[in-house]
Image (cartoon, rainbow, N blue to C red):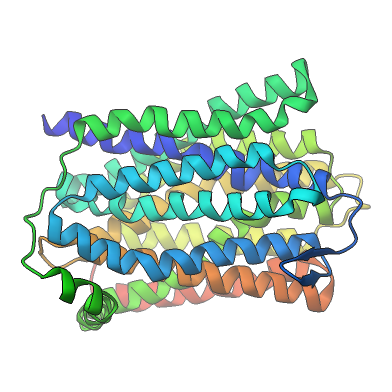
Length: 423
């Protein structure tokens, strides 16, 4: 029975990864750029933004702030009720609704639909991951967590690539005006396939806590601070969490802004950007298995360091690209292949390595809430840095170069962990 539950857990990546590919990486960023193509500056909520990409970056930052504020409370409620699945369902429906609402975003006159829909979808996606990830240490032994984490990412890459191909077929071979229907398909795919996860996963493996409702709401964030202090007493966890914060600044910011980089900075045609994204997806399948294998041969730390070294090279490569280079398109493809190689592998290892380092407990939701908040704070800082460097220099290439420093810092911090243990 446990194997079926492990499969159902991993299959949620198949369901929700269509959001991260179609909405955050592939079709919606290109659609957003085309819809507002003739707009020099955009005004939103009375604020004038000199660049539409700065507004988009800030909207994503807003969604992360919301998740940071609400996830401690929801994790505490989950622990009290012993029901992680209920909140997994709530956030899945929230995210799918946000994706579907993007269908109604048609131009500057209803820009608010695109911005608020993006925020709602992002909150749903990242909020659901708090409860999804919290199942990992409960559903697999430490020896199996690297493999199961990698399988989840593989399912996500394959499933999201299939839906992206379906969406592209509608847009390219039927009618380009069907682009907005892609957002409806994402919503249906996400919530439809998530029903398999909801059916086979139990409400929770942990027992409910005995906190009162009053103390629950008044002390949720204080409880999270206590959890953070507890985790930071463990030397390995302290260095890992700081390292994870640093690498998340780089990976997730690149994940959100890569398509806009190719479109805005290199003037690459939309079809070439889509080819690159599909290349990333299929290479990422092999990359996830590769880094799972490397973790067995080299250990988690050395495998992570190798992946982060490649990420550093990717940032430097992006900085050196020039739109007038006749080979720029092929260099962008090559860069995409390297991104695919390390994207899922590094994230899967980071998730499973954290799970292994956790002290024995029944309240895994609160620990993964802390993990999620560390990642979201990194995303807030990363998107802010990206937008500010873009504002100051007028070039995304300097933003990419800036992100390389965070990968280097993460490599150094992992080195400190390796002096404590052999992972």
